[in-house]
Length: 370
Ligand SMILES: NC(=O)c1ccc[n+]([C@@H]2O[C@H](COP(=O)([O-])OP(=O)(O)OC[C@H]3O[C@@H](n4cnc5c(N)ncnc54)[C@H](OP(=O)(O)O)[C@@H]3O)[C@@H](O)[C@H]2O)c1
Image (tube, rainbow, N blue to C red; front, side, top):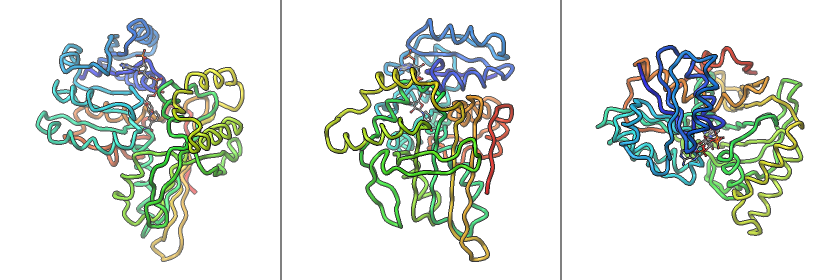
């Protein structure tokens, strides 16, 4: 049976991936990070629910070598160590050299879209290298793939993620969120490439579930902005947005985006520790309800305008399992010998919505389409 090394396995999303994988009898899991005590504590904390054998190891992703992976005896590496915006392919290359499959949760556009440079090496080593096995681009693509057959052609895509305020993000995620504030990037708008600024403008989405109501969102830079216009070539506009449940916090991020854009704040990501501390003190605001939506408009096969909106609501603080789920699905499939693809690619089309739904069936996660 497979042995899975989870780098960052006691972080926010790494620990969720470990928790799900530890339920699989026969799997062996190594929880790794720079802090052996924390890795061991995470392994010990799983004892009651685990079916898999779980161990701890001290490894640094920034100095990781193929020898470290061979030493761990892992056949699959899951990399949750961000911020990927600041990282190169060291971990993926080490996995290839060690003959191990590699899966990461990256959300950095250049990192995910460029992973194909490892394709030849991965094929030669007979391994799969997948980047972005998370909410974006993996789950978003699975939802769009599910909606696409209803359309003669899809024209516009607007989709977003809004975690509940009880969600306690890791430093890497907060650095990634703040790092994008006010920064310019390109996105498809009305059939042309346009310049957009992170967390601008302020837009709203009203969820069908009255417990969620209306939430605020702003534009974010994600790998999908390069991947989806190729995968869905009839698209003329693509908007990816993210939001923070508590409107005052979202407004603060929006204000920060203007300060960055004006050049008054140069490194917004450096504000991650103080902002995280403030958010933790105010965690009683808001709810434990996270949400995601994917709205596609276009033309149906009857020639009429068509509009479909998929919504997901994660209750009871189960939202943070979602970004870990695509990596868990892929790791389980590789471990069971059900995934034969080899080479290196961004994570689009590798999981489908049915697999996602099955994987989260025991969690308080509800989906609907209207
Ligand atoms: N694509 C998507 O849709 C999506 C969605 C959500 C999150 N993400 C990404 O997922 C990543 C993880 O987020 P998170 O909130 O789980 O982060 P986190 O809570 O900060 O966890 C990071 C983990 O990595 C470990 N770590 C940090 N630097 C390391 C190093 N050099 N070597 C080994 N381990 C290291 C940390 O432990 P130590 O510091 O003790 O080593 C910690 O266990 C972020 O980059 C985030 O942007 C992507």
